Length: 414
Length: 209
Image 1 (cartoon, each protein chain N blue to C red):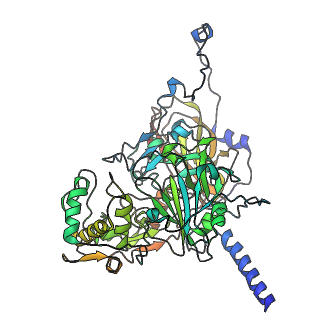
Image 2: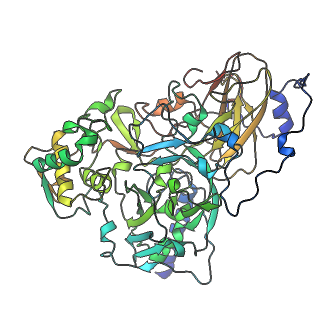
Image 3: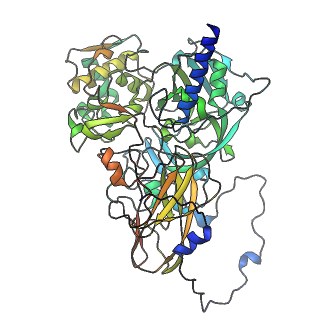
């Protein structure tokens, strides 16, 4: 039976999953004064861009080791979610998906053109775009293909590989509405084409309703200008929609009365459906969650206390609640959802767990502000055809823990 | 008359608000995931920094084809035989002989009728609902090492060649802005508009399975 808890008692939820206290360690060696305390460190250089500690070099974007493309121009690299605390992805770790590599674009030469069904076609230079009143908004960014290798049986070992086409970003830019209104939208202009200046000239048809609702012409992310691989010097951001609609290296917006039905919205980025059909213009990334720790490839250090934590998000609104199961989905407990809880944004959930050392299967399930409950893959299978490279996987992700504390991908196994 | 007009425009505005408040309905017919109005701060003096341009000045960038009716297709023409020559010079290295797959990419031929099987084979022939998608995509993205360098006639010729390999036009076909949109594609009616959410999971808490 569906039951939505009205109580949000942190202690109750935490106490429910944590039984005993963790035993204190015994026999630790006496502490010595470390060399770092006995000699000066690195002086401050005249100018530098800071980098992570050298001991963190394993925290890096990686290409999938499951689905290996035979070239690296139309390819992707994934965010190491297992190493990300909080809800913001550092710019050097924001996932990549390009169709023809990362272009090198001089912002002084770049132009953004708006034309088609407008009163006056316009071109904008970058130094003019940044003069407009700006907005900054936190949103998740997710590729429609996130999870496509792991629908029915495990292929990926880590959460980076299963869910790493996902990042959390504070985008800054100009509302698209500001620029379109300056050009003067023809009342018949119900769709707009957004096109990149990259070698794929990647393009998508976007309904004007979405453009005028919350689209951002973004030039900055997480407090600095866009990274080249994320669209430098300017890109579209469509909050909550599949990543590829947020066209990078944006050079052109063309207004029309009908969509274009390009390859990128017919032969690609469509969903296989029963009876040989395809679902088109499926833009919203539906409510989803994943446990990032403990997650696939990790090793528990024996029985005792662990914080189960992960991310939840929805392209249709805010996260209302996240439930966690440690018994493969038989019983669920409501997790603590950490503030801030923002619209179409990564949201962090946490719950304490006292592992008794027996095999367990961990799962999370998110619920959004529309009342939609994240489904199990079996529920999605009832409506769609899971055949080939299937997009829009928002199914529940199980991780199994064996008696040795090894954590493994258990999709389709639990 | 005037008040009737005002009344109907008010009703429209209310309807628009109501529509935008529902995640599952929109004027375009697809779910938007809309969460309400995002107000832009009104400013007393609106900045206007756009540089006015003419469509003629934008012509080199104006490469999109509206594929259902072929609007935007330029002058030029190309035959199946000419397409084979261009293909063998500029495409075969990645896509393989007769477009059947090469070192980089899989086949661009066949797959028609495969969508009702467990192994869907996606090619321009099996997948594209409209033939002008070939022109739009080849012109904007191909060849991968030198995109946006083919002439319009070379793009028409490649479109003719690939359509012929897929059995959709005869060997003597010539493609141009008139003939390309008229090619009947087998997947023309293969698409459904987004109708999600398509699952209705319940929030079960105990003894769920």
